[in-house]
Amino acid sequence: AVAVGLALVTAAPGVAPARELKPLMWGWDRYLSVTWNPVQRHGRLEVEGYVNNRSPYRMGNVRVLVDSLDDRGHFVDQRVSWVLGDHGGDSRLYFEVPVMPAARYAVSVFSYDRFDEAELFVP
Image (cartoon, rainbow, N blue to C red; front, side, top):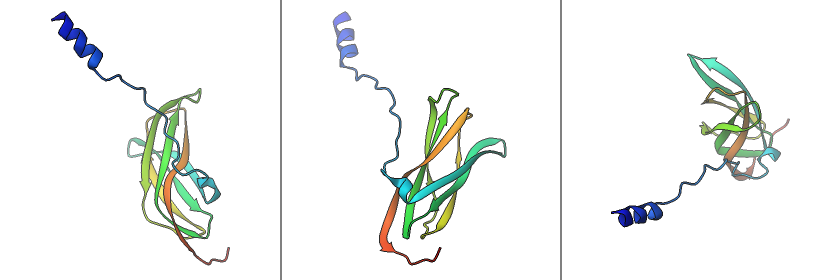
């Protein structure tokens, strides 16, 4: 019985620590920016804001990454959420993401699709 128990323990897969999520799109901040604020709404905490498209390209399938951080800057939680709609150059899309209470938050663009046809716009 001891040998069987030992075999089961050594055969069990190890538990790997969770890894910190990073934006999938390197250089996203060349085209997009994020403005946001934590808010209390209907008894729950959310981060709400806008993804601003500063490029001449149409963007879609945008997802934001919200990091909840303690007072030392360590991760408490991370959430990835869709931003509904698509937007052309020089426009913005609204988002809201439920979050855990934390000392501070950081928001970045996790991923997006850029459509290759540039739109003409006058700033």
